[in-house]
Image (cartoon, rainbow, N blue to C red; front, side, top):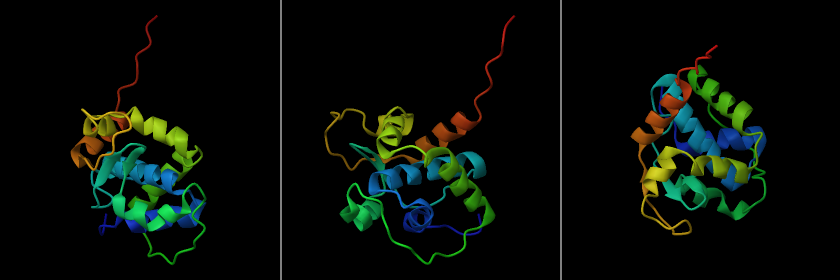
Length: 154
């Protein structure tokens, strides 16, 4: 990756591409960070993610778009060009995860180790600003991508 991006820059790319509602946008950011670790062995953005009740959240991005509530974010942004490695990750996430609704993506994140570890000891509806470890995101997605295939036995 030639340069580091902010989570807001990545968010604006998704907004331009698919106009997600805020909850879905947060999950797409999480998956983008994870797959950047898996595919490129580096973080996509430096912003921290927190383990909120409804899944991983970049607080600054949440506050920027929360007024859209459950509606699509219908803004068009001028954005900088992204390098090819970043676009590969973003398009992978768009093609494989953007087809799902926000609640389904939320349920997916609730079954994944980074969010579970960060929420350890909390009640399901308890508010939290606990950071999801970047190392746990990197480990989880790298292991997810590089899982050995199950062998078939005759």
